[in-house]
Length: 487
Image 1: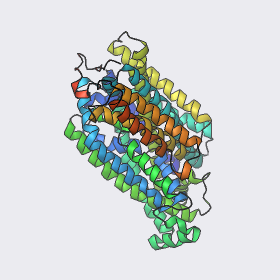
Image 2 (image 1 turned 135 degrees about the vertical axis):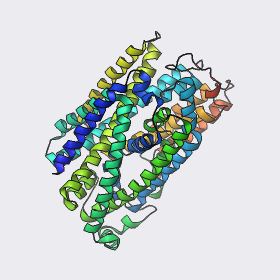
Image 3 (image 1 turned 45 degrees about the vertical axis):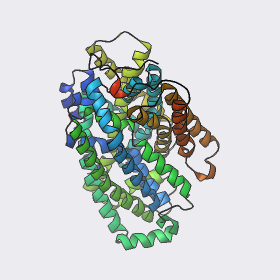
Image 4 (image 1 turned 90 degrees about the horizontal axis):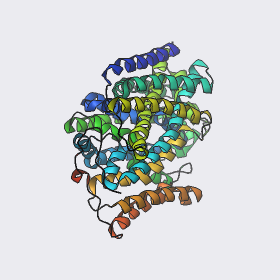
C-alpha cells in the first residue's frame, strides 16, 4: 500500500508535466510561466522550492542530531523572506516586467556588465549542480527503504521523472506540481508529527525520552553537538541566503502582478510555519525512537518514522511528500541551471541572437544535459544531503546575495565593488573552511563580512562611476533580452 501511493503520486507528476506542455511556446513560457502565475500557485511553489530533500530529510535528521536549537533555522529563513519582501522581490518583479528579465544574472548584467553576469551565472551552475546531486540522494533513500531499489537505479528513476515533467512544461508544470507537492507535504508531515508524538507518549513523553537519550538535545541555544557560534553562523547564512535564494528569486518574475507576488510570499511563510512545527516534532520524536542516531544515519529518521509509526497509506503519503520535495527542488534546479547556461552564458560567448524557437529548443536541450549531469554527480556524492545544502547556502550568502541586494537597492554600487564583493566572499568562505572553522563558527563568518566590506570599499574608494541602477537602465526593445551596463 505504501509503495502504491508513491507510484500513483509519481505518475501524477508526469501527467501534470505532459498536460502543461501545451502552454509552452516561448522561452518566457518555459522559464517564467509567461509571467501568469496567481497567488495560490506561486504561494505554493515558493516554499515547495525550499522544502527540498535537505528539508524533508536533512532538517529532520539535523534536529534529531542537534536537538531543539536547530529550529532557529526557521527563524532565520523567515527573516530572510521578510527582508526579501521589502528589498528584493518587488524590484525583481518590476525588472522582469519592464526589462524582460528572467534570471538573476540578467539583473547583475544590467547593473554591473556582461562579465559579472557571466561570473554569477557560472557560480549558479556550479553551486546548484552540487545541490542537484543532494536531491537525488534524498530520492534514492526513499526508493531504497520502500521498494528495496539500490542507489543507482533509484537515482535514474528520480532523474527520469523530474526530467520528463520539467522538459515538457517548464515552469508551468514545475509550479503546478509544486502546489500538489505542498498539499501532500503538509498532510503527510502533519500526520507524521501526530503519529510520532503518539509513539513517544505525547510532549511529556518526548521530553522525558530526550532527556534520557541526551539532556543537551533540549537546549535551545548551543550545546556540545553544535556550539552557539556555529548555530549563529548557520542561522545568518540561512537568513541571508533566503533573502535572494536563486531557486525562489527567479520565480518572482512569474507573478502576474506585484500584489500577487506579495500575497504569494505571505502564503509561503504561513505554509512554512506549519511545516516547521511538524518537522521539529518528527525530528525530536525520531531521535527518541532511535537513540543511537549519528551523522551517518540521520537521513533515515523521516523514513523510519513513516514506516514504523504510521498506517501504510499515511506512510506512503509521507514518503510521497519526501519524493515530492525532491522533485520540486530538482525541477527548479533544472530550470535555473539551464537558464544560466542558455540565457546567460551562451550569449556571453555567442553574440548572434537566436530566434525564439531556437532559444526554447536550446533551453530544453540544456535541461536534458543538466539532468544527466546531476546523475553523474550523484553517483559518488560528496557528503550527506544536509551537508551539501549547508555548503551551497554558505557560498550563496557570501557571494551572490550581497551583489544582488546591492544591485537592486544601492545606487552607489559600482562594477569594481561588485567584483570585489564576490571575490572576497568566495575567498573568505574557502579560507574559513581551510582553517577548520575557527572557534566553531560557520564559514559565513569568514565570507559574508568580507563580501559586504569589499562591496562598500570597492564602490566608494576606487573612483569608479556608480553603475546605472536597474530602474535607470534603458528598457530593451524586445521582452526576451535585458539591458546591460557596459563592463
